[in-house]
Image (tube, rainbow, N blue to C red; front, side):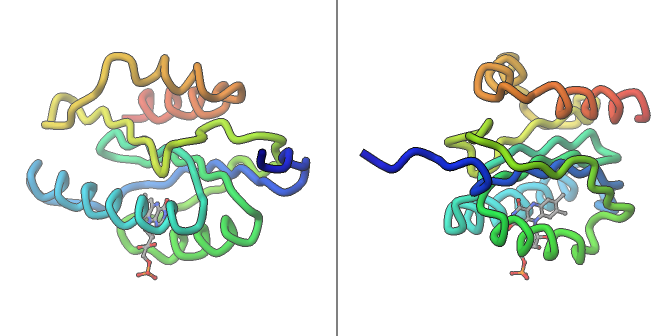
Length: 146
Ligand SMILES: Cc1cc2nc3c(=O)[nH]c(=O)nc-3n(C[C@H](O)[C@H](O)[C@H](O)COP(=O)(O)O)c2cc1C
């Protein structure tokens, strides 16, 4: 049996940012697919889990994992020219992952622009993440601003 997760070994961050991804619907979808592919590959390797929300204008992302892995990942995300105005809105130590099993869950709502949104997605996140409230709150915030 794996050892119990000790409090302090896991950190969860949440940030929001403004998208600089431009182009046709297909170009935007391709760029997002690229972000997700690289993210999932890297996150699997680094044992990072989380969720990414995109509404066509802004991103909201939550990342959880070992503090050093998260710091390194966030530093790369900060340097990424595909978004700007990156604001960290939560950084806290957690006892257990809220998104265990998700190398990067993806939630998109870009006004029917070609993304598939599972109707159960939010319910799945709520079921998996006891701390979904802040993520959902910022998702609502981004939706209002769109
Ligand atoms: C909105 C957004 C979310 C991202 N999320 C992740 C992520 O969860 N994990 C990750 O490794 N890279 C993520 N990236 C990509 C990184 O910014 C970076 O491009 C990638 O890690 C490759 O970095 P490298 O070229 O230095 O290897 C994200 C980029 C954007 C724009």
